[in-house]
Image (cartoon, rainbow, N blue to C red):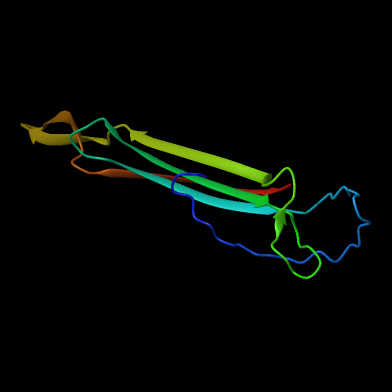
Length: 138
């Protein structure tokens, strides 16, 4: 299992009944259209006394896994069919964001009819945000 993963849907879907002659095997295949959607947003802030801000990071994972079970006649205990759990589609997304830079301005004072200008760094906090959304059909 995945650390921190959350099970969103656990659903059993009967696929139908198949009569199998004694001592025989059958091959079962499964196909499906799978849609995965993830949304990530990473935000970083830059304090006024630093050129670089913190690194904003986020990650997301989405996956669909299936298991096929056989139910013996008479509704006995279910039997997990080989090969067991199969991941049909999976995605992992990681996003990082860092802001850097300073806002500068010219501070000018009139000294005896002449402008005396000094470039200063603005005392502000900058914030940057970047997002990514992914949608996959497998």
